[in-house]
Length: 177
Image (cartoon, rainbow, N blue to C red; front, side, top):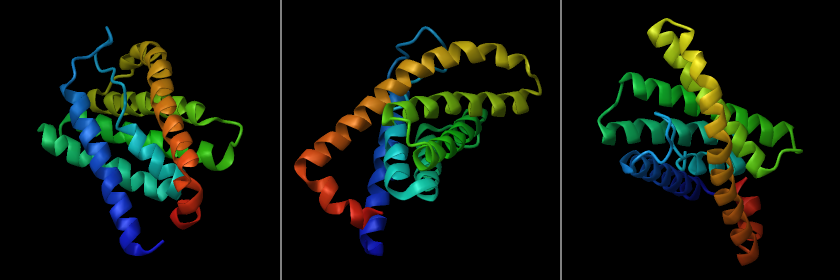
């Protein structure tokens, strides 16, 4: 794949992730737990990890969090730092599972990404507030990560099926990798 095509593809993934990040921040929380989100922006990261591996996933994850927080007006706030740490941790976990654990489906990788995102956020929060008592919230976040990760994984799985049926995935997969 040419550098120009790769740059355009990454730019589209960052734009998609940023748009979903900002849009999701405008939606009222459908869950009774504070801080729980669907994680739709993670689809862009999952696409990048799937086609480009860890490095590509980290580029998309970091840029979408930075741009989304700039647009949302929370750049360098504790929420930004927690979101960034969750995005980085989940990207590493998803890349490891995709690369070294083929027994995981896309939905399984997505759920693991959602779980690890929550763990990364709580680790950052514990460092910021200098207290481990924040981990009492972990079981609730993990319970919420299962359905949200399944939704994100299902959407990405459906996208892959559509791309495969259209022939685009087969035609360009070699060029994307």
